[in-house]
Amino acid sequence: MDSRRSFFRKAVGISGVMGLGAIPGMSRSHSVSEALLELSKMDIPEAVVNEDIWKRIQQAYTVSPNIINLNNGGVSPQPKVVQDAVDRYYHLSNEAPSYYMWRILDQGRESVRMKLADLAGVSHEEIAVNRNATEALDTVIFGMPLNQGDEVILTKQDYPNMINAWKQREKREGIKLVWLNLDLPSEDDEYFINAYNKATTSKTRVYHITHMINWNGQILPAKKLCKVAREKGIKSIVDGAHTFAHLDFKIADLNCDYFGTSLHKWLCAPFGTGMLYMKKERIAETWPLIPHHEPQSENIRKFEALGTRSFAPEQAIGHAINFHLSIGSKLKQQRLQYLKNYWCEKVNDNPKININTSLNPDYSCALAIVDIEGMEPGEVSSRLFRDYKIHTTSIKWENIRGVRITPHVYTMTYDLDRLVTALTEIAKNNGS
Image (cartoon, rainbow, N blue to C red; front, side):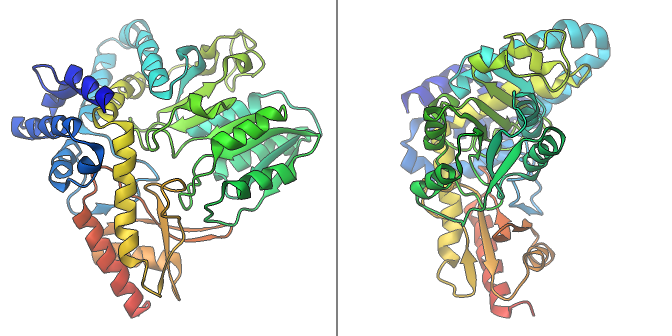
């Protein structure tokens, strides 16, 4: 609480929070800044349920008032302050690209690296700025030393891009993939630990751990699984695409070997921004995905040898971090948890509606999946948009089916009331 207040006082100063004056209309800017300031003075339980304040924070975003976007799990919108920063850096680059991109903005990556490291609770010498979780995790999957016959444990509920990367390495190099097929949702840490333990052999070299399953929001006990791996001399890779800046934790808490995430999800950073964490002692032995002149160096920057890229999005990451910190990680997680439970609890007693995500805050947060008996998920999702202008996504994947609902901090409870009405009416009509 004190650290959240301290950060906000420093950020606000005289001119308003983090350049929010860039938002057209001073009244709008003032409203957002004042709302964030009020939040910083409140106890978290009080702040979580204060709809008036969150309604004013919503003005920091440019989301359409005509569509209720409940698919923030795919990619999240950026606050206007982040959008404006991207524009500024992009236009600056075009004034003299080879000068401003390579001599000015390229140097700014170090500040971004430090801000990300502070948020992650690790050394900035363990952080690489990438374009998304796929690039970060593919760097690890294809770069870590493995031999023919070495075994990797992963689950059928992992993200497809990661599954495909492992399958390609299996096909090319003869490593062995050991598959777990999880029965979800679960509120039992031992269920997951036993599953990995049972699959572990003397040839196991890697645990691939998805911190939050993207299909239904299931949180896995990543810290405990990393501890099991470490005790067995096994490397741990954590896919944190859906947990970084969503859950209140530090990467250092997990004590994993590798961690990859997309920053354009819950941090609300520019599209096409991501981050790779690699424990210092793993850097030298891991080969970069894009060749580097010193591929076996101990410098984390070897994983950023991408060549020419747009500098504007990565430079604006810092503005997204500032906005995130002005809310605070703990408050943000609890607000998102509150929003998920708000709508779930209102439909949970309906015999035709099934919530296939835990409501326990230890095992889920914003993301949940709902199924209506007698209807295909795609049909429900289509009805939600056609009749109620609610944007969602349908899921059918390895023991998981339903419509994924994912609010964000700009989502209001009155938006979720419309969702509750929609689900109730669709269930009542049963697809008619």
